[in-house]
Length: 279
Image (cartoon, rainbow, N blue to C red; front, side, top):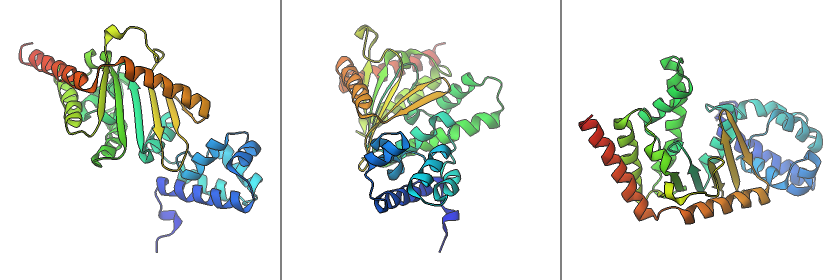
């Protein structure tokens, strides 16, 4: 029988989360009361128990102290926190992997879950123009692995609202753009994803400050993720998540219908193909 040392980070997080739940219940505490002891919300505790949030080093120390677990969380936290993703995105990627529904709005980029290999390479190269090929490959590989979430025919639900700018901004050239847009259209036509485009003429909208990702789970409270250059914030406060959910609802209302959006995505892809054929 394989021991805990052989578990991958995701499995370790689930194991640590289960132990946290058992330790909390043994102590006679609710998620809310434990959260108060740790100076976090009850939702945050629920996310750690579900394995959708990592138990960070300082939190591990506080858990061991509050629950009298003799260093368990400190010992098991390091390997459970290993990730192939950038530090600011690691928690969000881990949550995304177990989400039942993902709703995402992007401004200038095609969402990572919908990127093709050459598109992802062009994005990473733009961020790090002097990086080695090996370094770029190390950034691209985890992004492509994330996209395997869509190999399942129905789960998770992915609803993407793309700003028209993400379609029009050439990343990697016209051939690269034609490929990624046809990829998105193919997923939409197969009814694997729902895509809407927020057109330029929609004017001011509810998320002009940047991109937004919302995630829902079967056994844990929802999360919102806000990202900036080299920075990211995973939010669990119910009021904050609800406010961002409203923003996404408003974006959906302002965007083209899925049918109109698919037609626009395919039209722009054809325009890129024409550019490639007649430079």
